Image (cartoon, rainbow, N blue to C red; front, top):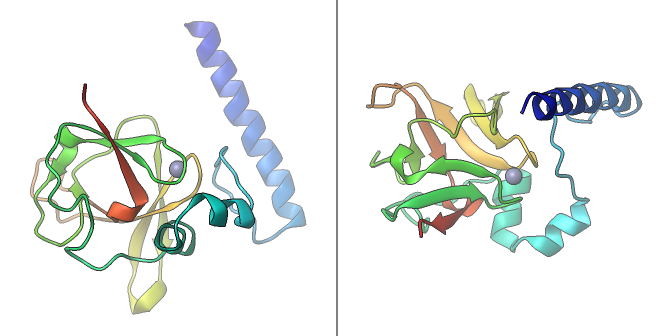
Length: 163
Ligand SMILES: [Zn+2]
């Protein structure tokens, strides 16, 4: 178990070093560690037009239209871009805001946060740490004990039903 942890740490360290080196060459390069990377062309092939718009261009689906907004089945919500497990049905709550909402994420740094100053607002964007796809935004007005509301596009998610 220790060895696995060590290898994992080494991997994260190497990944961040190589990422920092690449950044010198390309200022637009994202500094987050997103191991799952596809070219723009590959993303376009993999995703539907709507998925591409939300996940890769930071779009937002219309409220109350998403397939998981009122979804109540037991299981795991995974990233629509890469399949990383992000939220469970236990973390989902009825926020009435029009998008699936969660009060926490599956532990392990699976979701990264980033300041978003678009549309004249200051919000915190949430992205998949594995592939960098846009998920939605996080707010601190949640009604549960965590006080958090992860407001996520249904389009950004897939669902694995509990067996
Ligand atoms: Zn992902």
